[in-house]
Image (cartoon, rainbow, N blue to C red; front, side):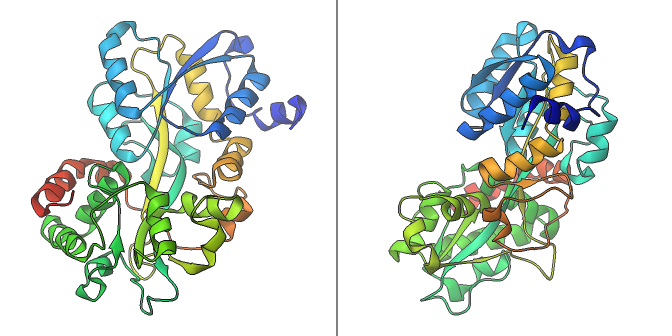
Length: 335
């Protein structure tokens, strides 16, 4: 995209006068493709981005240790649980941005305007086409005794699973969510291990009949070669769960303005830029994610997964149930 075209795409964003200065970004998004987001923002605004990248919990601990002297302007991280953690630690501040409030769906933003979602991934069900004749159509079906010895899923320490269980608590209540978690543990094909891609590899290898993984791992294996998945991806079927109910659970990648941001105006401008058409479509094209802003194009690898109904539960409410989810994981022995 030329600088002129990009400038037009960002024309509606209220950038600071002359857009001088810099922006200190603390990010746990570990995707090389995000470099394009940063360079395009700098090209259009003149604002230099200084990046500190690392694991989410380490970055939050660093900000907490830095206190009022923290140079962080913006925090970007993955999953509602970490956004909640940043808020609970007092590391974010409320901002007044009509653009963000209007463009980001209400269920994907903090009730106090301290964080906003910018991209999504569906946490859905996959199955072995050649061995599983009746795959689960809902999340609750994962706990059906008929699926005993078939289910592969990540550990309870995984934030994606924490938020999924917190959403089930929100919809079904703690008692039913506990029964579900115990049923999944009883149905596991193996002890939880590896990342989301490893769950897909388990289906290809025959170790798993059913798996849970985020959509962008599967879409990435469609778009480019992923070892242990792409060559035999036709073995894997996918299901967007709960299409007759709440809809498919969506994980969120988002961010907010740091509590002591020295370049606050630039920080708000950057978050607003992330809702532009150019940025939203690049989240999909560059990392196989779903935009949060409606009406923007999907990457072919993402569009190939098909249309579906997404769960529109308010993620601020889900975040409140994350401690309950962790308690349930511990109670049922989910490793």
